[in-house]
Length: 164
Length: 413
Image 1 (cartoon, rainbow over the protein chains, first blue to last red):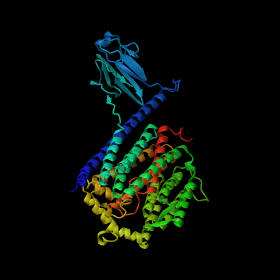
Image 2: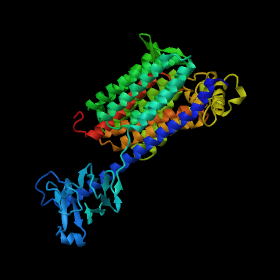
Image 3: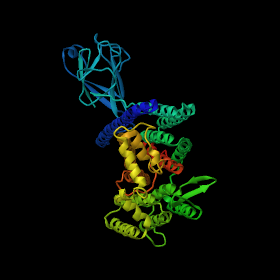
């Protein structure tokens, strides 16, 4: 058995592994692609239904995607006199700073705490390196996450429920 | 909350790079450390990656088609370079041409919108190609299906398959409904099909006949209402096949070899038995690139490349090739399903059927699952026309998906 045939037969296992990893990664990409498309379809359907309902009142053709943050009533919320709900149009930054779309004067919040935005049929949330962190359904947000209807968002002791 | 899973579009490309470096490194070692092989390998790898990047960056629709095709090309090319270095280099030149053809056919198909009105062009061009082959053709290993122009040999039947799919799509997309000479277009498509099949019988190119006929049957099955026409075609085909079996020596030999290759192992059954021996000796993971002896199989570089892959990359390698083709047809079907323009939909279905049946027929033949008919494996086998035709079909599929993604308005109309 020469050196070459030894290496070659060893590499045959490597080749098989690589090819199957390749297949696996392609299948995973296809799966993610399909899921993205199906959520987009659902949203389109939902928007169409809304269009039918508001046909009488709709004046402009350009639709602004809106979502609502419902405030959960607790002690801090009452003390800070938060609104019952905050409406997000396409994009909003939540924080203590004055430039924020949703400004809440709470000492546990950072100047810019988190942001929510709409893109490709999905609502996204990203924590903006806040000191005390943002929690969605009691899990601390580290990367960008997709928000679903009814998710609980909590930041600095305040709690909100996300609704599309 | 839903964790945002971002698709990693780089990972498959990296795997492709590793596969190429290892494979061509091994080939380089087998040829006394000739650095040229490494350069060739790296060149083709960079070329394929460039194509993938262009497709992704320019938003040319589906990203997976070219990726899967690149992997198939890599596997086939490694095998070819190991079998015969000269052929491998020629194959690389063809692949380079094929990529240019891919972009050309993409641009042409994307920008022209009157494809569905030119059925007579497809029919005429196909017939002219067949007549040219019959009169000027060269006889290579029993079948007259080679044409040589300026020293380059090519097989017109590969191009005819695409023309045939477009011809059928004209009718099935309902954009051609007027009768010609008082004959309904439905019967003209049937006559066109049988005309092409007649020409192919004269060329003794059984594999292509099978592909064309299966495409036709499945198009009828998908588009026609009721089973009457389907049954009539089926009956006609069955009668023709029986007559062919009775009177044509070629077909009888193929069927008898399929049923029992062992009784005439030295002559007629030699090819198929050698292929079976090769597949069996590979085991699960194969004997390693360069360790096997696939050169015992006649025609190993074109029709029987699957047997060589099974021998040196194992049953798992062979299964991987099948899975890759499976994914390719799945993606193509998905594009066809999503297409809104009926002509694009029909062409998508036809080309998918073409890829799928071509693979099924030759791999089935090599593993003695169905009678063997000589035909190339798309993207894998050696053969200039085969590679070019596969790239044209891929370019058309890409254009269809791009039209869908970018919206029909900006394309053509």
